[in-house]
Image (cartoon, rainbow, N blue to C red):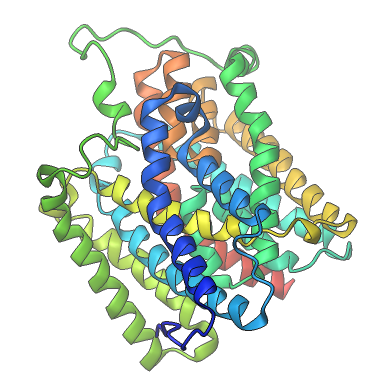
Length: 408
């Protein structure tokens, strides 16, 4: 299924250049993680944003845009191979640690908020697609599928949907760029105290202090992107099992799709098979309890993000792309509005609504920050559950919505 680009290269300088690029792709996440752990500014920005920034810097420097057609083709082949490997390995690692069985108990409010959010996102994407359908936006149907992924879990889902839907690299990067820029203002609203305004217009109940609760939520906050000791033998040795399981799922899903699925749907079926099998394996307690699986999966997502951003070409941003930007803005505004109305209808309280938006739109790593500001342990756990359920459902929903808008 993978074809490594090993054709002979006559230009020694390009071979050196290619080696430098691949080293930045594979080694760059280690630098980003070090900066993330060392400096508060970078920890606030987040590793995904840092990965996109590194990739765009590589692109703007001209490093990833060789002039010779043969060199550009060779680099594109390496980029394709790394993307094809990283995404299928990341999905299981980020789902194995999810305790789906435990979440179904005593979390009615959480699942009501999740349901409202998913219905809102799907409705917003479909309506926005119908409104912008004749606006001349390139690959709007694929952008619609990607936006469902963005707002049901974030970059890990979008990485999977990119592989399944195969949009043009420019389309994918523009969707990423506009989405990050637009949603930044929503995150700033929540972090800046917007949750207090929501408490005034939605039902709000102050969380009672539990005298038996731990003094802090440090252990829960460290459930995501805690890279401390990741390179030590104590952490790496147990990770061999989940990594082998991820590789096995990738191989099995790939072989099944090659032999039993038509060529046009092979990449879609690989993603759906890996997602489904990963959820199934998450019920294996020994595997589920392995520490740092999410962080290992994030490493592969960071590699993917750097590669995608390094394909960015500033000359591709033209006036015609503004339609795509307004499409994304429409999806965000409508999804939040519909989510709010459904939450009001279903009597979801203010803090649960806020944290469900954060969990779905920004993904679980952002949940502890907002939950901490609201001083709500209940919302911390619920937001993480909602975000991880978004990871599990996003691939199915993104592909389903893509098929729906094509039909429409």
